[in-house]
Every structure is written in C-alpha cells, then in structure tokens.
Image 1 (spheres, rainbow, N blue to C red):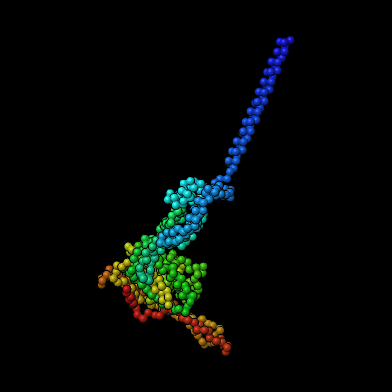
Image 2 (cartoon, rainbow, N blue to C red):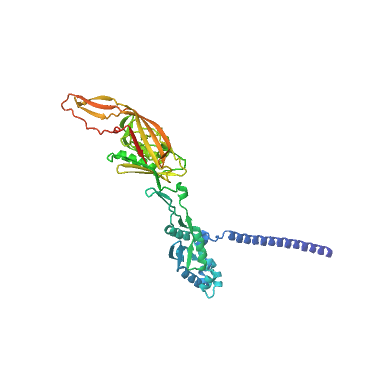
Length: 473
C-alpha cells in the first residue's frame, strides 16, 4: 500500500514538472515574440523617420530652434546675418546682406556652437570660422545669377573696319563664375566675413584676329566705280542686296572666288525684285535686274587688283555704265564670274552702293605691281539692223523707238602689268558683241482719236568714240 502510494506520488510530481516546463517554455516564447515585436517596431520607426533635408524634416521645427539654451545664440547669429557684406565681382563692388545671399541659421549646429561659444559670444565663433550658418543653395544661386547679369561684360569680336582700312582687335570679356562664387560664399558665410570676392572668368571672343582670316587691309590693290540712276528704286534695291553679300568677303591666299557661290540665288525668296535686264540683246524687265552691274563693277576692281580671271562672260550687248569690252555678266546658276587670289596674302572685297554709285575696293597688303593697265582695240564693227513693228493703236504715219539699235563689235582686250616702266606680264582676251536690232513702232490707225503712247526711256550704251581705249591704275 505504502509502496503504491509512494509510486503514485512520484508520478504526479513528474507530471507537474512537465506542465511547469511546458508553461515556462511558452512564457519564454511569448517573451521572445514580444521582444521581437518591440524591436521590429523600433526598427520600422527608425527607417520611416524623415531624412535630414527632406520635405518632411523641413516641415518639422528643428529641435534646437526651441531650445532655450540656444535661443540667445540664434538671435545673435540672426543679427549677424542681417548685416551687410561687400561683394567684389570684377570691377564691381556691391553691399548686400548675408540673408540676401541665401545665408541662414543652421539650427542643427546651434547646440554644438553654443558649447563652443563663450557666453554666446558670436565673435569667438567668427574667429574660429564656426558660425552655425549654412547657405540655402537655391536662394544663393538666384542672388548670384542676378548679380551676374549686371557684372558680365561680353567679349568684342575682331572686325574689319573697311572704311578706315584697318583691323579692330578682339577684346576678351569677363563673366561671373557662378559655382565658384557659390563655393566662396559658403566659405565666407561660416567666418562671417565683412567681404567676399566672387571669381570672374575670361570670355573669349567668337571672332579673333587669328580667325578673321586677314590681318592687313591697309592698301587698295584695285578699285572701280560705276554709276546708276537713283530713280529706279527696285533696281537700286537689287544692287544693294547683291553688294551686301560681297562686302567683307575674304579670299584666302591662292583661294578661289565664285560670284554665284558668294552671292547665292537671285530669287523672290531671297528678296530680289523685277528690274531692267539684258536678255537676248534686248533690254527687258526681269527678276534681280541690276545684279550684272554688281559683277561688272567687281570685275573692274579685280582686274586692276591683279586677280587671276578664271572665267568671265561679257553681255550680249555692251553695258551703258561700263567701257566697251570691260563688263562681266552673271546669271544664276550657270553664268558665273570666277577668279583666284594669286597672292600669298589674303584680300577682302569692300563694296559700297549709295548715291548713284557702285564702288568696289580690293583691300590687302601692298600690290606687287606699280601699274596695271586695261587696253582694248576694236577689231571689227558690224552695223545693226532695223525692224518695224506695226501698231494699230497709234495714229497712222507716227512712229516711236521701242529699242535703240547698237552696232556689233569684235574687240581685243589686254591687261598689262608694270614694275616701274617695265612691262613684266601681259594677258589678252577676245570679246564679241552681236549687233542690237533697232525696233521702230509705227502707227497704222486711221481713228482721229488715236493717241501716241507714253515715250519709253531708252536704255543702251553710247558708241565708242575711238577704236582703242586705255585705263590704268
């Protein structure tokens, strides 16, 4: 009995120990889970906290801003930021407040600055270069950019003063270095400096004397002038437009020149107007009328400048504004005036069209010839024919000239180069003009009310007074 009782008690004791062990394990597990939950919650809170500088952090008041122990120092630093600083930018000096330049109190640094400062003495922080100040980069960049607009000085390009026949040198400009200025500003703000220097950088000219392509335009190698009526507004406009494409054009040493390539297409799209042109020997209205006077005047100046004449075509009839045998016609895009600069130095075309004169100068260094001569001889002359045109609107027996006739010519043209009185070189061309038919309009009307038309302005050259001619420069 006793044995049985003792055995039975021992079994119960063992069972109780098992229960307590299980319960303890469960409690330990519960404790572990609870601890794990708390750690996870703290970690999550840490990972979701606003980052410094983020919008969430900026929206919350800085911890030190409301700290009574730093309030006095913050006030002293704020007063410091309200004072002016002298900004040096090149030759410009301007007084601005630190706050105008984007400097603000660094509230995160206030507690550390308060411990470093002696009795909130800002001067000690200034001496240590440790003011609790930071620079709002956006505000600072805006202030620097505004200043940049007033202190920057643009570079001056080199240019040819064709009227004065001289080269104006390029001059570099200066510009405010924005990000260099920002770095200088951030450094000076921490020291509370009384002035700050913003760095300037040089601005190179777009066109320098070296890239201009020519360095001497002091001599006139050759020049030529033709005249025109100022009353023909559209033709005058064409003259000026074409000349503007040539004025200032530089031809490199031994470089080629094409009138059509330089002036370009003569079209309505380019602005050209209808005016008198010579077509098939007859003076008619055509687009870009007057351009040939520009090419002819250029040919004259280039002839005396000694340029190599690679291709030139004369008109179908002599020009009224040019000596016979001394003209150059151009037609886009096939008929061109082509030349080459034969010299070891560059040359430039100076073109002026004003007050009834088209004038060209070829400018560069000294011409190697003392004299260049144009000579021509008329070898053959062919009389012009006359053709009648009947007009039923004109009174019978009346007549008027539609187009004046002009004889045809075969001409020999020379160019002679002299050094002193010695002929050192000679060139010649054969030039031919076909006769220009005279058109006579005759009236056939028997109507007593028939009237004569308005008299036409006749365009045409004057016959040469002599068989030979000579011009020298």
